[in-house]
Amino acid sequence: MALPQSVIDVCYFIAALLFILGLKRMSSPRTARGGIVWAGFGMLLAVVATLLLPDMHNRGLIIAAVLIGVTAAWWSGRRVAMTAMPQMVALYNGMGGGAAAAIGASELVAHVVPAMDAVTVGALSPVALALGVLGALIGSVSFSGSSIAFAKLQGWLDRRFVFPGQQVVNLLVLAAAVGLGIVLASGHITLPLVVGFFIAALLFGILMTLPIGGADMPVVISLYNAFTGLAVAFEGYVLQNEAMIIAGMVVGAAGTLLTQLMAKAMNRSIGNVLFGSFGAAATGAAAQAIGGSQKPVEAADAAVMMAYAERVVIVPGYGMAVAQAQHKVWEFAQLLIARGVKVKFAIHPVAGRMPGHMNVLLAEAGVPYDLIVDMEDINPEFPVTDVAVVIGANDVVNPVAKTDPSSPIYGMPILDVADARQVIVVKRGKGTGFAGIENALFYADNARMLYGDGQSVAGQLVSQLKTLDA
Image (cartoon, rainbow, N blue to C red):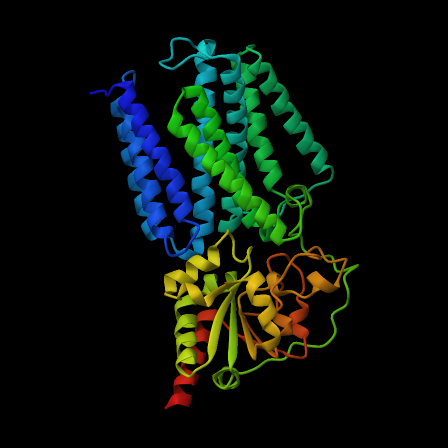
């Protein structure tokens, strides 16, 4: 069964509208869920229309592959924990880049082996050939880089891997990939050149990601998302598939904008994120000495402090996600609200391991959107906040970002938790954050450390509040 090309074009147009409108609805938490559904229907329409193209071959194999992929994605999506969402996003994003690279590889190999059932590069215009090679390069980098990001977030690799002359080696590998790409784009295509091109591109993605620390993972994931979108758009031009072009450009533009916003939130350039080796363990040689000591507090005393406060701001971080404490934290917040305490949740743009990670966790727990406040809006309120509760956050509340020019995070905008009248830090131990930097907040005169697992501590606070109300 096949549809006329005019009908296919109409389907692609409708799919493109659904992509764009879906993305627009994702700009607000209240309509984001509907936006995802709209974009999903757009993708379904585009896939079905593509399968009904007049010159489509191997429909059975394609449908079988789609069914396998949908089943695996549905199963994994239902089972994955919210704490593992960042690495799943990185993995799926890498698959998108890998798929784009595979299209480019298929077209290049088809030129070498004309008997293959594929559109040969020889039939492509010079522009299409160049974009196909560029899409293959970007998609390969996104695939291998996202795979390393997944392994880092999953804990399978050390946070960073550096060696002397690393940037020079990376530059040489990139130059090799670009050089081979230029040769291929000029029409001189042989199997050894194709293989060397993809090896160099994949290797560059690996080498570029290995030295990047976990503190930069939100930016890296967003950047590779933009790479995947661009790669899909370029390969869509090769295949003359309007839906791929539009969807890829939308994803690429959104990912690029988000990457810029993430980097701005850290007061750093994208180049510094990629090549500055941020996230390294601090050497401490040039860092300012932190005076004072960490002062512990018991759950009962912390509960009393908050129960009789007027304003409480809760600052969640990745530690809350690891402890899966968001539900208990919200239960505790509800008890405070019932006592007349004004409670808000403060979110840093790069908190967690991917953009919006903390927002997703809080939404899952049922926290109303109007209680979740961004950094720019909540910072002016900390001086009039009675108690700020930091649960699992570290680097995004570290005052050295404002006071220590030798610190790797100096200049990064932070949540001004230290300005609150009292600070309670819920933490499992005395270790440093993911960036490996000692946190001066923990030693401040107005800070108290409530040691323990986030969920267990939140449960203790709930029990203590209920005791006060009894």
